[in-house]
Amino acid sequence: MQIADKYSPQEIEQKWYDYWIDNRLFHSEPDGREPYTIVIPPPNVTGMLHMGHMLNNTLQDVLIRRARMSGKNACWVPGMDHASIATEAKVVAMLHEKGIEKSSLSREEFLEYAWEWKEKYGGMICAPWFDRPLSIAGRLVVSEGSRLVSKLVNVDRDLVMIPNLAIHMNRQVNDGYAYNAQKDMLPVFGSLEAKGTFMSLIAEAAGVKEEDILGHDLFLYNRQPGTIWGADETFLSCGRLDDLQCAFSSVKAVIEGENSSSISVAAIFDNEEVGSGTKQGADSTFLKDVLERINDSLGRTREQYLMAVASSFMISADNAHAVHPNHADVADLTNRPAINEGIVIKYNANQKYTTDAVSAAVFKALCKKVQVPVQTFTNRSDIAGGSTLGNISNAHVSLNTVDIGLPQFAMHSPYETAGVKDTCYLIKAATEFFNSCIVAEGNGNYSLGE
Image 1 (tube, helix red, strand yellow):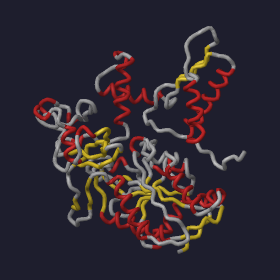
Image 2 (cartoon, rainbow, N blue to C red):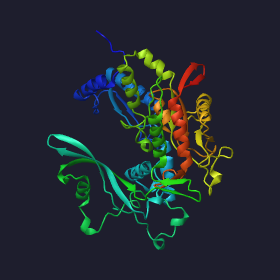
Image 3 (cartoon, rainbow, N blue to C red):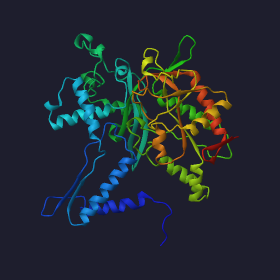
Image 4 (cartoon, helix red, strand yellow):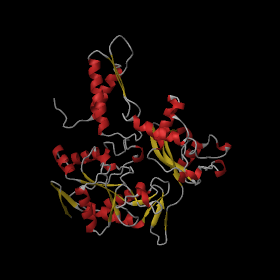
């Protein structure tokens, strides 16, 4: 019997999962046997999974299987996380802002508010979505005979709007208003006569029949065109600069770069702001699978693949915060990135960013070769910051990585602002990266050749 040289979950786990389902091994009802139960509370406020969750759930799985094999009435009710205390604290704080006491709510009512908070966490700035033309775009899955076909759709006109409540009816709106995502953020689609016509309008925009639409992923988007502005026309504003600015620069660079001694990869993931846990997110096996398939197609061994990964280098590019001119106090006193002053190298003592001395030095050396300025970002010590995809991706493909970004204002607003010069800086630096042969010599030593 030949044993595969690598573990394939798709080939192994489905068989045994089906066996457990078919034999009702997940099922449990009270009886005379000694009970053994493991229950996990709801997910924490971030909803993001990491190696700690994997270890935690693996131990539970082992314990519950052992208990069942020992003849106990075992029941495992798995959840997503063990840190519900963090969720509760955040939700209670939100309730206080609304003038609601937790003790006045039923369990079901509290859970509704908990899910409302989870939907808003780490997401958008709500206020700029109001009183501006919006529309709908996304993907449809339609029936064409015996086939299911995906089609992109964009209603290319001002279609909906989220109107503000007049200040006469909301005197507190300028004093710090807590938006209710379910109540305040619903867009207006049309008059009463338009009721029931939404999907027919979407079908018309896609050129398909409404009855043929079997699935859809549809999203609101800001219709305001991008613009270059300022006295010297060096500011760039549009929607989704975070992180289309880095994505554009990376693709531009990988196309222009030439390096016959290395395999250049530009990996652009989706769903960062909702945890990256999708099949197309950074917490999937997509990058790992692609790299392994490239290695296999070249006739290389598993050992050669691992050696290649260990000696590789990655730039994790996700926009950074510039010092806001009206709120300079929220920035670190020493590290103060400015728009159009260069690429930002990001550091975090808690390893939310991947940058260390080695990766920062490699990136600075690349920038120096093409005369691209660099800046430094770190959060104020008393203000928690975000994280990027570098460390999430590294849980699947571990390699030396630097976290960088382009400085911007209003991150997660539907209309963000960054610098024209900084876009050019990243294209220049990333092209040099793809042109270079970066060789890991061991013990933190690197050589940078052409």
